Image 1 (cartoon, rainbow, N blue to C red):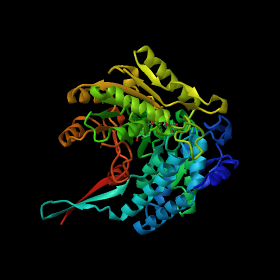
Image 2: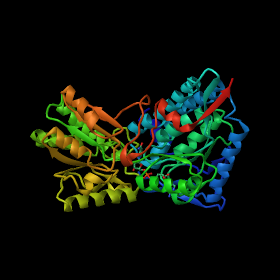
Image 3: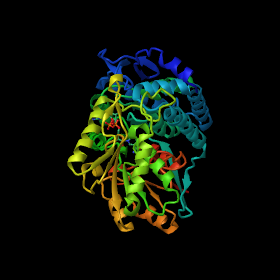
Length: 494
Ligand code: NAD
């Protein structure tokens, strides 16, 4: 990847995208489209279809038809593996094109996007392609006159609703295991990051995925997302996004066919620094990147820094130095460390959180403001707020922006109590040289993932899922397969 290649791609016009239903590109049934604004400069990049509930119903019907006639669900594992492997290869072959398209749509810095988006998506699809012929049923330990068998069957039609921060990576976390297990899928990308997923779905068809097995419908969450979640013909709904939407999806399920709903939601993840951390300089740099990469628009972002009081001032100074050393700007420049905020709405929301923090006693020690406004794009300076109290809004609510809330603690018990003082439980970290303390903290902090002496970077071999109001399921690893199968018992009298 070099800058010239990136610049050539960014100069290309992006043709309007339509839905992908039953293998065909189709416009919205009422002909409406939505402008796609690029967060890089606030300009219109292209259009996508502004879907209707009828469009969503058509996509679900296509997925159902494909599932029932067995064009994918009825194929043997080797055949399914071949298509998924080819798809992963095509994603790799188009990696830069996909990454640049995605960045023009959502603003993530290209250095991160190339690894986290096509790089991660192809790896995930390959992982589940390799796994799909290693999934066995079971024979139960019954009395000798009975044969009790447990079959694992695909669930049928999976609905997948995806957010904007890492559309390809998160999309693949759902599509990989769902398709590997033989299901059909209807996907609804975010309004502000549909393009790379639409292109990735085209590549799936090029790889040989039969028509109707993967359908993509774009449009507003409250219209097409709601229609998907209310559908009587969707068997499992998988979602990554905000808690508010997740709550609605559960209601929609209850009001319709009681489909299983798996939620991957937000977080307010604590990064806990003890004075005996093995390398404090490194910890400060990692803490900064743990919150500021992708402008803090990362579900597992270490958005709360809990620092032992004895090192608070020097450690905060090191984090501030690291934050101020980050180059924020054009996400398509290889020199940029931190790209754009996804939308103006999100940027204004971030700034409002900073203002609230100030009124609640927080001290903004760096950042706190919009920058590069002359570009027309949406950029914010990496922001560190100290003196944040346990109950402050900024300590309790997910900002989903480049804003770090810092609180000092004196004892292990206080660190644990602070760490567990929110409704969330997605991720966290502890930095210490004391092995017992590290293990004790891993047990005591209520999250789906705890890092020790590092932050972020967990690969596809381990599950990602939250506790509390951070979610109720897992993406990644072999555990994710469970969401996409039904267990069926065969009880046979011999
Ligand atoms: P969001 O909830 O606003 O939107 C997510 C998706 O839901 C979008 O596709 C949107 O169109 C759709 N949607 C919105 N309203 C809907 C409705 N009424 N019915 C059906 N669908 C609807 O979230 P977002 O702003 O796109 O993403 C940011 C959130 O995602 C943050 O809270 C972040 O922490 C979370 N997230 C979690 C993880 C994880 O793995 N736990 C990963 C990434 C992001």
